[in-house]
Image (cartoon, rainbow, N blue to C red; front, side, top):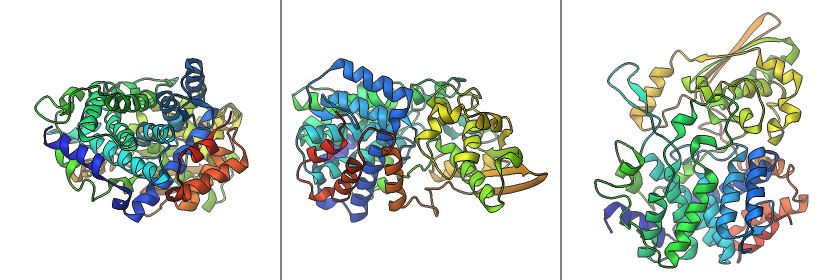
Length: 477
């Protein structure tokens, strides 16, 4: 196998639990807890109900658990769990590119249960899945690239979270303890069968929001990652040099470049997984800075909702895409991407985020509907300059800075939020993650005792001899 593919394969095969720094183990635990919680809370959404009903109709050898549900085949469980984790749009952000975890975590989780892996083995699988999925995602297209003409960056026609497939394959292969040649073939199976890069087309869809978010299906990619590893385990072959040569994956994906250094530099030593962020609000991450600002202004100035005559938000031009401009809220996906809804619901529920934000009892609340009419959105005057700086420094080409202005009782109150909660100097703490997990779990059918059992098992996961114990706590039959 060629060089880049070989280095990725070597990292998957050779990394052990003892190679994981303490902070990476802690991160992997928190990612697992946060993701399982998001899946449990996700049951309130139409998308989750359709996906889980679909899988239940398929039947399947009871190998692995659907979080908050019953057992089915490992690949079907991965499909359902990918959909559930992402259903609220409250799942982790990163590493490197935006959504990685719902694509890459389910294969390893399902196969760890099927193969009776230990907690340590699941932690290694989780760490590798996030690390490799994020690195491969960052090695190819972003949604904005440098340009010679003002504002010196341009949109690309193709972008998606599709490259995360390689993280799912990595986590699955690690749990199955595949040989190097098998891992190379599994990566090839995943790569040549990955979905097209359709996210930029999705951005142009005006409401109602399609349930297939980002045009890059979490369930399908999680299913594919599981299937690729299982087939390679049985001897199925594919391209074992998927990342290499002039026709490598980056060309299949339609990217004009392949940043090899993003994949291999420090692989196995420098853990980009630590950059993963947690989302406090079940809402598109682009909206979070402004939501924080609304919450802060209301709290600091004792503003009552009925006193508000206007809310103005200035941020990234991303907020103005058709996919985020819908005003008629008809389903949970609409609530996640409608900027006016996100900012209106923050007035009433900003201090209490959770799955209820996406339920009819909230999005049909006349107060929220009326508040949406008072929201206007524009582009921050420094947006182009700051986005270009991010592109040049290798950061995500998104403006996190948001300016919020609230007019109440004839007075204008304003604030600039540099980074949203959960990023930089305003981290989402371990206690925040547990609180969020309990809040999400409360909207599912698992019992309070199961909720606490899951927390305990994950916090002590390195002591768990069989992941089936964790799976049993997640099950509702």
